[in-house]
Amino acid sequence: MEQSQIPTPEKCELVADILKVLSHPQRLLILCQLSDQPKSVGELEKLSGASQSAVSQFLGKMKAQGLVKAQKQNQFTYYEIADPNIKKLIQSLYTIYCV
Image 1 (cartoon, helix red, strand yellow):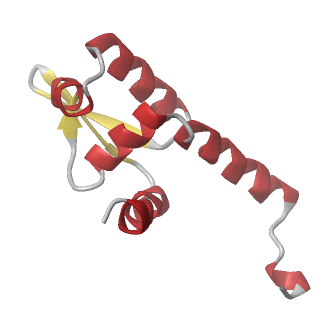
Image 2 (cartoon, rainbow, N blue to C red; image 1 turned 60 degrees about the vertical axis):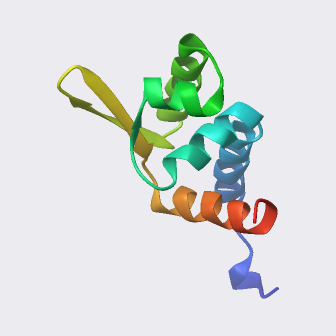
């Protein structure tokens, strides 16, 4: 690897923080469910098998990390992956491990 291609310590810290969030199976499952389109907490609850409070906690942590964003529509809040790079990462993981 050339010297110019070596990431900075700050970049490595950022990536490590993202990977820590992704390291939980339920959070990873939720992100996989969000990789195709936005979904509500209720939809994610059904798809992931986790309780509503657990899904909300997972989404809160991922939102604080900047991985997901929320949009209110009528009485529902829909979540989607906020960062296109995270979406690519999740899709790559799916292709490698789930297909």
